[in-house]
Amino acid sequence: MSHDPLPGDAGSPAAQPDDDPRDEPAPFAAVVLLTVAAAAGVMVLGALAPSALNVKFLLFGPIALVVFEIAVHEVWWKRWWGAIPGAVLGLAAYFEGRAALADIVGDGWAHPVAYVTAWALFAAVFAWASRYPRTLA
Image (cartoon, rainbow, N blue to C red):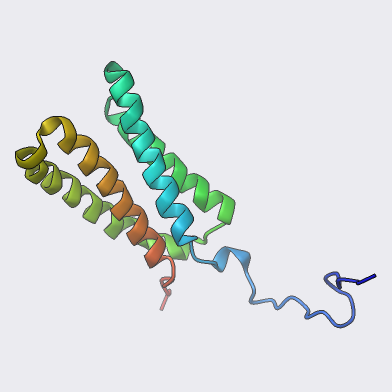
């Protein structure tokens, strides 16, 4: 019968005081995939109930998911700085992408594709930036 050492057992490394679980970066794949899924879900819901789509609804799903990921994974505030450039790039991708796509695929498809792409870009920049915490120097 094997015995896995419990924390504090002899032979197991003691927890270091510098090991703060909040100092872990955001899980890249989970944040990006779940944010894209939330954005796509919002677009599907909007297609099924177009009267329900308003600005609050468009922002709530993916933002709530990112906040949930931060809370569940306890990502430290020093790692949240990527939300600002992620939001700027996401907004730029949405507005510029929607205008460009409207000429190619029409406005009916341009909005959903640009919306999901913008949230994917936001999530990717946020999760990537969480690997490089801000210092308070």
